[in-house]
Image 1 (cartoon, rainbow, N blue to C red):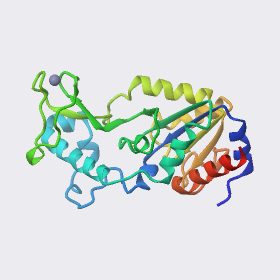
Image 2: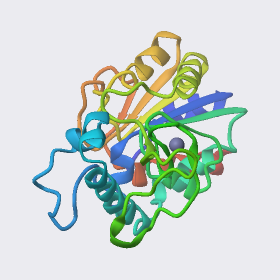
Image 3: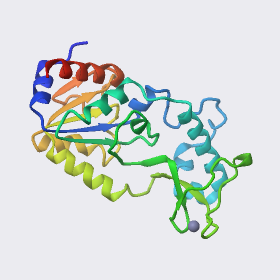
Image 4: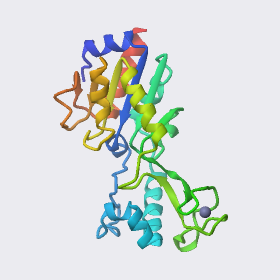
Length: 246
Ligand SMILES: [Zn+2]
């Protein structure tokens, strides 16, 4: 694949780089969002399971669904795209990684600072009193754990449909988009707001915006450079060229 010189030159001059990642980056590690490997969950609507209403009407069912998803994630590994992005954290004065993924694969690959717009599936808290829960989650019969403080139901730290995004993460993501010299949008459909507004915000503030996605998105034509490749192909190549030319 050929990385355009204009992108490499922009990156060589850049002090401040921001990256937004979405489901495509995890899909390259075998994690298909909401997809069930053995079909047991096919009859359920993820939008109903991943919601406050869904949890309130059947917390045990929602918990079992998340246990299935945690199982898929535990069987997955970061891919070369994750590792290249982790490498880039040390290549610029200011670097911000923003992700819509909840699987923590960026952290597994070595990324230290990650703004998790949709929370993560690894940590849990009490649905009733909101206190963090650090107890055992792998109970017999996938039983739903209870809060030791108030007896409430334990839920994952993910942002559900209809819930607010974490304010601090979103604010910091917007500040990064406004301040960066180069902005990457990688493996995201750029259809889910407010994350979808970040590349536009970056572009309005003068950033050079790169889309890495094998599929065309609604943002593709607006991108300054569109790399129609998987993250695991494009990002290691960009890092390789940058290291070679330093
Ligand atoms: Zn509680």
